[in-house]
Image 1 (spheres, rainbow, N blue to C red):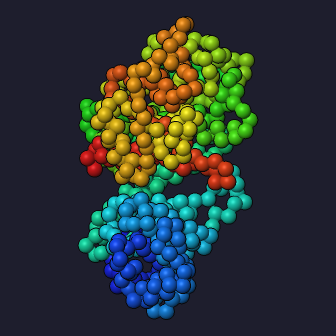
Image 2 (cartoon, rainbow, N blue to C red):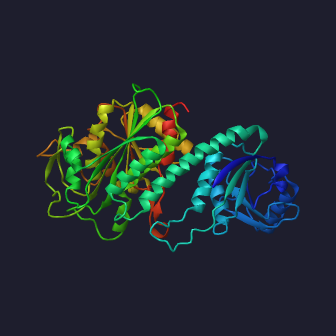
Length: 489
């Protein structure tokens, strides 16, 4: 899709040359009547409201075909709860949904009473991208449907330059989300650790990133005993992926992003129940989101150094697999008693977090589908945020608001450490069921004393289940806005 900004006013909407015109109508405040600002559209809006065919309630849409004196043959009115970015994005999603399966070649969008700022540009791009996405990688019979050749953001003439820049940035974020979604949706027999390494190498070639993909011998040489303990039951070999983007001076401390890359999680010897185990292919959504963020960063080119670390392997039961009760030595030298082999994500992450020390980072953020307990706490709307540094936490929360990719900060009180005590090692890899997301974060925190650190538990938001099963691409937008804010962009 080609995204562009076109100058127009509300009064000029009837003259817009497009195959479909989307008009977002926020609910008016007080007793003010609903109005778009163009006579023909206002007449259609008033009539639809009076006849009960439309209501200014979130999620409501009205499809109008060949209105007299309106150049666009298709018009979709979509109601927004108010003029906030969140409400406008929801309305744009609904508007594109009304065209699902019949998306024309040129779609133009206008938001009544709103300026064409970066939030609106990003909402338009992501709504269009989501409406056009169809999984076809291993389903060639799927009908991919029509994709608009052009999507226009209609705005005031004075806003054109800013809107064009915002659209370009939004497209980079959408591309990153697309890469994350594409990798995570693949079945585990396709998206293996080797495949993720290949995708990283390809990303390096196409976007000028420095990429290193370490194989088992190199990982063993480093001494990543916790990581290898998870990988040792699988036939598929592990990979440790390092991606470097240099947007600032060589001596400038980087931001390091760490993504959990379990390409399939059976639970190991602590085998998971069969129900919904197919969704364990999504246990690499953290890795996928970090890959996607690096693509977005490489396209936007902020003045900041960013490093991605992706430990990736399968967690499988076999005669070689780690057993409950085994003790392993991590890269840090700390020993870990593995009480539950299904608490494996923290084992591969802890070695990556120790590896991050060598870069003397300004901050480290790890991203992982880490715990079912986080889903119990927050459901499927917000990521769980844990941080050892208040300033870093506030930066991530601010980025989440900008990106409309929400997260919620949870505690890291020292009292939770007691749950990880072990009689046979420096720590256990799992505590009691209560507060499971917190004790998982406390485990990771033990390997992050050298730098400001934050952890995003995306177990509830990295993918959807049920009839809409599939990856979301979250939190690529959050991470990208975090990096841009750190760069002062």
